[in-house]
Image (cartoon, rainbow, N blue to C red; front, top):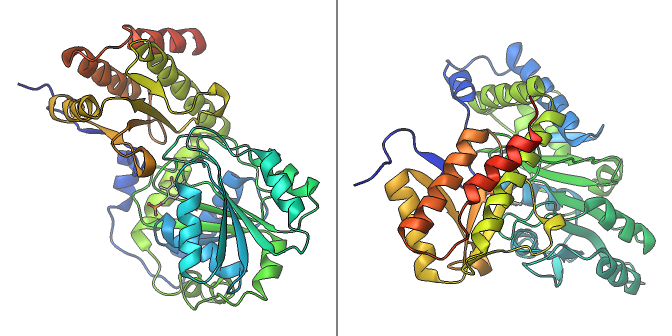
Length: 395
Ligand SMILES: *Cc1c(COP(=O)(O)O)cnc(C)c1O
């Protein structure tokens, strides 16, 4: 028997739920790609991207997933054999670094941990030791989607400044943009990488780089540039140049609607909603942890992200049973642990197009699985989430 009929819910950290309004906006015939409405849509999207990242910088829209934007960012500002420093805090910054190594960069990883945020003091010490200024860029993620840690971007900027280092500061916001504050200009980020299918609620396929003047200046000397990713080529006169070919017409319709929804709700309210739903999730998980089988992957509460919560499960059989039960019996797909946490964790995503019933439904299904499978856990996790929300969402 099962109670899974109805709409399946994906609680995975990307792609996330696409709103019906966004799907509907994509359901129309293509239009002219040279003049008129589509050109205006592109201009609007570029401005929306600046607003989301709080910058006056230079955005680009790529027909690619996040891995494409990673390569775009690196190839536009760096040259063969340049050294880059990757700040580890899970799997994604390392993945970005590996992509860089394959295109000819000399990648050094500043060792970190899956259990905690990047330590700004370690960044400062490493950069101070680089007296010959070999390091050309520092790469970090704002939220690591595997560990669910949040890194303190302004503190890392300060560490770079304290070391008196002029490396480019490059930040991956793929799992954080639209879920927490991000201030590219105030925080002194030189290149931002983002993608559409997580906090931004769009069907996968678009990703973004945003650069500032310093990055643009480095771009003029970079020799890893290629025809397709190249910012300068994409600055050409024709609308067509912005996409290095045919624009992704329907994706642009969808993204326009997703940004309209964010603007209607207002970014600060979107961020507050994420904070509330993430805190409710943590209230539930805290209870479950009392059973000794589940635990937070990130022990320090101040380092837990508002987009995803990684929960360690110290029994792989129980973990698989929870995931299967939620999917097969309840119709909720919960995220699996990835990279070093493969077979060791589950991930509850709470980003993008999500509200209290969607989140409470997921938490309810997980708690139901714990009970049905006799997995030791503190009772009342969902109740704790409800209490948190009732106390913090005022009438
Ligand atoms: C999802 C994700 C990526 C990879 O994005 P793809 O679209 O899957 O290529 C990179 N960085 C972070 C932080 C992510 O969450």
